[in-house]
Image 1 (cartoon, rainbow, N blue to C red):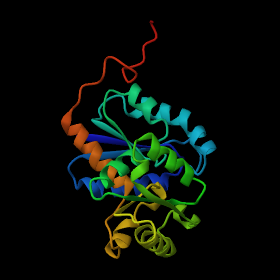
Image 2: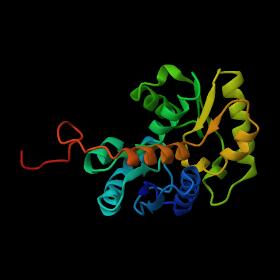
Image 3: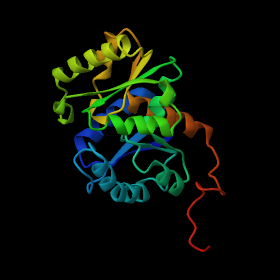
Image 4: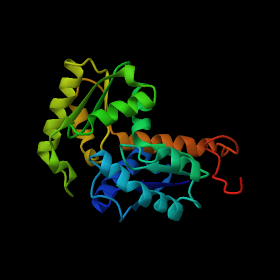
Length: 233
């Protein structure tokens, strides 16, 4: 099986970090290939960045995911244009935030979300509400860690993540914590090893969910809003 990971931002090093996380999660059960939106913003840190990434992401999906793949991972925690990409492709498309919430929800009652920066926390609250998880989200923490967007892992990021996990657990009552930030790929193993509750990586969750859906081989909808677009009506 072959899974395509589409990164809506323009940072190749983030694509590589996501690929490493995703491939580790599936442990050789499928091939995962990655593609980067050269026309996207360097990172998605706002509503504007999210909007600016959409056109390039759709072009990326048309170019690399319309054939010879069994599933697609949207390598972005904002689930940018998820419904549009789902409609245009004939294979399952997994959003990182949706997969993170669904997977974390199987491990506990209350979920803590961990991201980078506070500007996006309201957007994740909106996503949780959109997916029907808002009542189960104990809290959302956005750590002040610009170094997370760098090409190499930074020890200070892991330290901030550990503190945030403790706060989500002790102060907000989270039973499980999951990252919703591609920039945090690579940090979870160290953080999880010292945490009092399960800590998951959102990209790893998306990879496992994509593999599961690929194995199910669901039929593409031919009716409704997720049927392939028609231009003859």
